[in-house]
Image: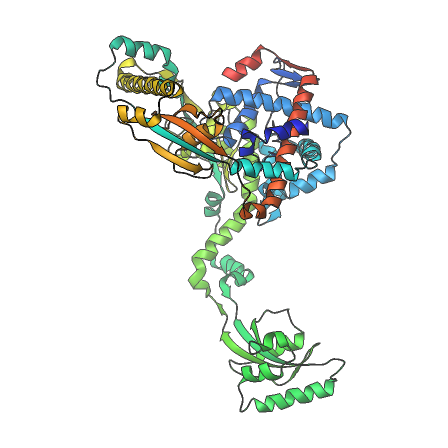
Length: 626
């Protein structure tokens, strides 16, 4: 297996070999309702059945992770189903091999998830709120986490034990640093003036109607629960605010700032207590006529701070002996203490900077205190209301009135929006994803959508417009422009192919360029890391075969603007490992080993899939195309 994988390092695989590969397994289906009922399964892996709802939920998670990458819905649903199957195959194999994760390991893992933390600590109310919103018990969730940990354990057992040899790493750098000499000309797109005929436009329209669909649109009604809104309803009085202000006084205070220096006379095996005290008293007397910093540099036994005049920086309570801290607290700016005894010996202490602490008066921070007080009082009500929101919206799936009435919330409405864009609350991608979920399109309330830790929304379909094909008249101009571009590209490619044929027949690029009035550009010692040419042309040049038999390699490559480049590749020189590359060897070895390990794991998973009892029925094909 590793031999096969390592052979790939000599080709295009080397380009991505330094990427950190190893995507953790997603917890597919974590939001499922377990309501498959009597529906036929979409797919089965052994005794495990997956229903359309499983695929839709997995798709929603996939779509969220890959948003903005331009992948169509049918492809994502197919990938979601494939991922469900792969995870189940792996999980069943992990169980069969005896891998286990304990309840305690799962609970410890859950407590470390940032999602459940408030102020950096695990929050039980937040955890329960999520489970309630997803109609799950804690045992269900722990079981899913255990499965995920088992799968990660199995994957790590393969990926973490792989290795890369020095030959693998050196081969990568040699390929990366390979140099190529080539000449090329660019065949630009011709400027066409003859407009396409109505017949051509209509034919293109009929063949490409998917390109001219207006996206599906939806408008929704919704209720929203926010901590701020609940907080604003909390009644306040001056007495309550003043009591809260007193409890939280530190939040409205600036601590005193003291910067200190010291001279230490250590008590140790060489110097007893009496001698050290005498030295400190003598130094104190000398300070009447000497600079503190200069004397510290000369006599202090704390040699580290003595170099800086005895500077200890800002004073932090709790860092020194109590006697030392008490002495610091009594000193005025510029004042030097009497000898102070600590566990180290005797100190002379001087305050070199002093900024008094300050507590803001209640009246000056009343508005801030009011907001903080209301928010603190509203937190419990918010979490309680969140649980009721999830419960009532689930128990009354065909309306929002029940939950709105019970919680005193308004039912709001949106304008139409698409999966890609919306205004108002629909500008949030989480809202759009929920709006186009199966449960909402089928007429049910959504699961609670957490906009933030302090803002939750439940929505339902108000109106829906399916995708529709635009009329020909409205897209005719765009089709005409597209046909002109395609004709121009075709003509440019035909011209480039003729030049390629002529070069292979023995003509020189210089002569052909002169006849066609094209500019020849020369690249010498070009490497993959350079940027003088487009990525598309660079990829084509480095994928081309090496020149053989004393003849250059001739190729044609399409450029990003549709123009064509005709290339004559004359020389390929092996890469040399630089001193800078040698410094990266350790990191490269780790990343290449990781890539090898992931490739080996993928091969193992493919074998397990081949051997597994997997059945996909017709509804699975529908899931891929819906």
